[in-house]
Length: 164
Image 1 (spheres, rainbow, N blue to C red):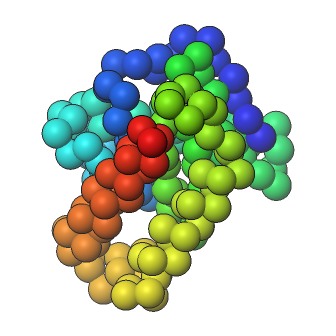
Image 2: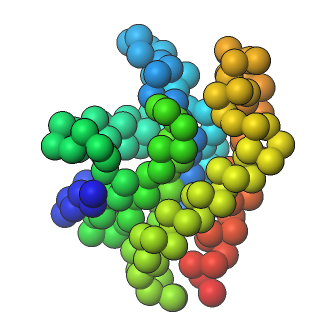
């Protein structure tokens, strides 16, 4: 399912890609929302901005699931951005936000979904699964450390591809 919005989240974070890994089961209490973020790039965005982005993605997932129990939204298209989501494990999502236009033009959603699948495979090569990592480290701190550099590398690579 693809959700179209005309101006939501249009370009407040610059033109570099945003990449996040989040667990919707975590951070359910007021003030703990940041706990659901397992990795985020660019890390230079303040925590409130990160929580806002992940919160918008999570709200879209929840809203769209009311219309289809089989599959929630996996793409959000705004005037300037494409948000692509993949539920890689129950309640664990990868999120990639890219600008819709650039030197190479529009990037196909299918290509971005495939890329998220490859990123998840890279995570699993070393760690079995994100849930296995969380089972051994319920605080999530070790998981965040493990995923942070991978997420930064992916976002940087996507940014270079878009700029070619």
